[in-house]
Image (cartoon, rainbow, N blue to C red; front, side, top):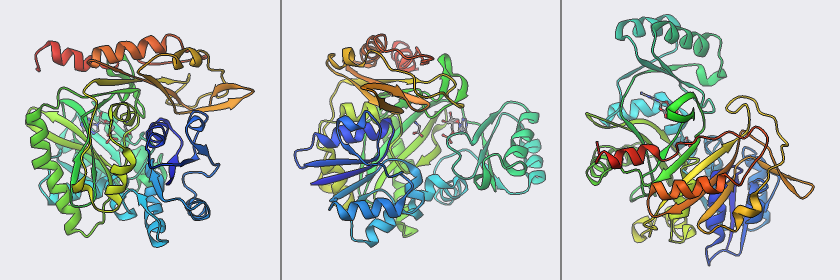
Length: 429
Ligand code: AMP
Ligand code: GLY
């Protein structure tokens, strides 16, 4: 079987690495991939948003299954196009991807179906938006409706900040058309957890819980990023909480998609806030989380291709997934300047030494190969991922590996997994 992975980050490296292990697979392609992915797949220089180019490639090479990593091709309708051409592809259609692509669409669906989430209102008029904020007060969260590369969410502690955010999004159009509307939303407090599942539109296969680290700096300080590290499982998602999420959030969402006649066969990634009043949805994503995908793939023992194929063929109810009981942790190594502009081309040292460690895999996010060396080629550069008996041991192993890696300007958080450890030592408080 020939499999094409679309994308070129740490998530796609983890997916390609796992797909490569499937006994059914003879060839893995990745477009556009990166220098690390080239170790496990043939990388092809087609950008992830070049839908016609990807379709042509898949046809020419007789690709049997295409797996979409990032959200952009989903929103551009890559799944619709491939299916129309009779090709098997894993991911929701353009309509389904609106769960991620329009925060207003997602919030309205939640409201209609009584899915627990913060209260909200949607505006295209800045004055009305400001009046609403003045009425409800701060703290409040202002979000650009559309995709803004992870930067369109502004948590505001002060009224002034909120007004400024509204002006930036609606008036200055800092995020372009993604900011034609704003969603103004209740500020929720609690533990944030990633709840990732596969669905074929009927059945649901929940993956183990995980937790991302969105802020750049230790102790959740500094700007929001794409994610500075992740671990799995997240102990805050207790069995009781899991059952509530399934009953109160997952099942109504699947029903809502069915009733709306949205053919959803892919990942549903629910960003959850575990509030004192119960689990509430912060956001939906239509793809695997990155970096969460990296620890999850380390823990998956089953054949990923079988699971994804069952999703595409709407046989998900017939399969089960087996997971390594150990925990996994991923520490992201980012370039200087991230999440802003970064310099590329810094030589990465120490990777060979880390390759010799067992239960550690370095997934490449932004790397290139130059003169027999790996160099930095993006904001997030590497995801150093390790297994361990528990989150503490997994993180310790990941950090032991990190200590052997170096490039100019390398920055990373020192506290990946600490919230889990704190939670456990406090006895689940
Ligand atoms: P999102 O892209 O919607 O996940 O937002 C990015 C980050 O902003 C989330 O991971 C949260 O940490 C934070 N955030 C988003 N919405 C809220 C909210 N309603 N209350 C508190 N924090 C939020
Ligand atoms: N790790 C957050 C995301 O993938 O959106």
